[in-house]
Amino acid sequence: MKNIEVIDLFAGAGGLSEGFSGFNTRKKHPFKVKISIEKEKFAYQTLLLRNFFHQFDEVPYEYYSYVKGEMTREKLFVKYPSEFEAANEITWQAELGAKSYPHDKVMERIRKQIKYPSRSIVLGGPPCQAYSLIGRSKMKKNDGFENDHRHTLYEEYLKIIAEVKPAVFVMENVKGILSSKLNGEFVFEKILKDIKNPVRLIEPNRKRFFRNETYTVYSLISTKKSDELNRNDFIIESELYGIPQRRHRVILLAVRNDLKIIPGQLKPSKILTSVKDAISDLPPIRSRVSKAEDNLVSWQESIKTSFPKAKLLSKNDIGSEYLKFRVKPNNFKWFHDSKLDGVLNHMSRSHMKSDLQRYHFLSKAAEEKQKNISLRDFPTFLLPNHKNVEKSINSGSLFSDRFRVQLSNTPATTITSHIAKDGHYYIHYDSKQSRSLTVREAARIQTFPDNYFFEGPRTSQYLQVGNAVPAFLANQIASVVYDLFRDL
Image (tube, rainbow, N blue to C red; front, side, top):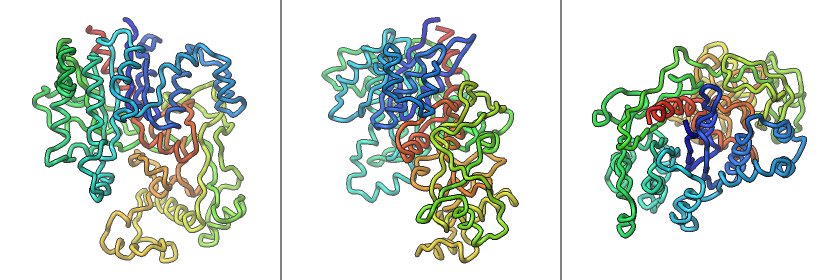
């Protein structure tokens, strides 16, 4: 079988494409990413490095030297010029749908990269702020909500589909897209219509140049016929497929109708993968102390001031972008790389003294009760100094649950971009560490391999991880797609 060319749109840090690139059968990797398009600077840098990584059958030691901080990115790329050139051709920093990147310019770049468009696949998740429940509630306060271009970025995605005519495409988005309305019409219903006949989005004066290929949309979890599917049949509950996270997203699989093939479904995992399964083998580290002297004694005293009997880490290790540590292979072999004798992107955040105490209190309570407690169960001295606290406690509003421990024996709650703002929803279950999750721990929960290095400042790293599709889930989708190509 020929290599299957992959077009990755709105690529982010590359969770979808990583799952496809990592899929192997008979020790071969049939899916080859030929172009990844992403607008955000640091996500683009992460993608470029990862596409460089995938140019090698045997990844050279210099890659590991770079991620360990022993050599510069420039020296790494200069050492392997042909692999860098290939990665640079694949990875494009561009904003789809923006005036500065008109559709013709985008198609020119794609055509240059794709040799067999009719046998290719397209991946992507158009930006979802306008569809997410939280984002939508905030944006509706803005006068321009109805005209926000993020409602219709999926149209740029489908215009590319209309011209490339791939055999298959995969589209991912948040659950909020199912209930989102635009000008009184359900956005999801319009998207389904457009997906089935994407050429309708091409400008009238250009349509005559394009053969009208239509698609059928399938569910990855239901065996129902396409015309019998309902909205919920497109919601993938990640924890049912071995992902250590209760991440529920809409994922559509569309197949070109002339192929006359019907896809199979994802196979549920027999057991749930817990947070502890995913991250317990990573080295324990302490959090840092903000607005005070930061050292082991200061950190311990910040907590013991209120909890004198607290059992805390006794080593002064806050982690780093590369922390030398021999990680032993666990049951989740997808993560492990025997060449990597350490942990990447595993550095703790700084927390105020009051938050350190809250994190310790909550993680200790979670250890004992195996559940989270709300603000109404806080001792008075730990309540946040916020005008809405009392009102929230009495009403049971979302604010009353603004602190959340990721319980050890269950899948995590959804890792979202909010993790970049603070760690309150992502408290580590180990009370001895009294901190929020690191980028690597969040990446483990998102099932990125351990050798996947996230570029940029830590805030951007968290954003990249939070916005991604779990790589191991994408890997399972790749298996379903590969079976389709075996029938072609």
